[in-house]
Length: 248
Image (cartoon, rainbow, N blue to C red; front, side, top):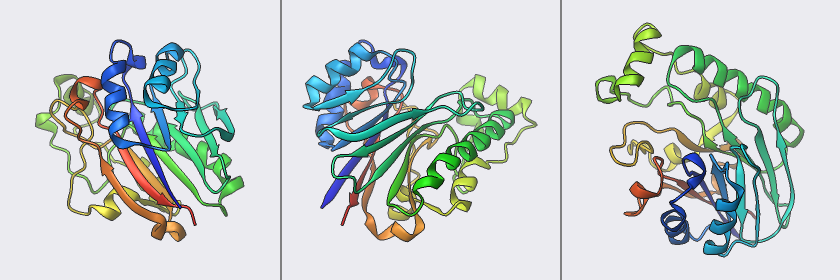
């Protein structure tokens, strides 16, 4: 049995871009969509209707939300004190998979990288209860992997200024912390040479959106791709990431 997961930052609640976002999602035909910046419940409701999703949940001013083709067995939002955004834990119908949705703190700078690392460690305290089951960490991690190239000269001026204030370089620790915790970067495993840039859609410069699986479950990753749909550039500033996972 194959399960298709899509993680998608829809930018500022997706307001005014429902049709474009729905077009991108429908082209992927996912079983579950993790949403970041899903701060407007009425927009998510319209997206669910436009994409044929039977279950959806989000809350006003809450970044993490989801839409599911089938009813979910369980979901909860978990907000550790250190975290800017709550994490979301979702158990799809059938209970063969647990999905943890992530939206770490934004801004590419040294002090925010430290915060993202602390946020991830806080998430892992909740994940620890399920570490023996097949689970996935996915979402907008707002940081780059330590092996990914970053051409600072091509970044927007405000980002270049923040990196300059950080001393001209940032030690990218957050994703390394994920890897050190025993997870595999699903996209990098499938596409070792593809940069996989996800932001901004108009001129991609960085990869901020990820799907991670525990190392013992690497064989369950059948595919993982950045969705470069032609409508995506007008739908959000992020390209979504899609993963096909084997459940049994």
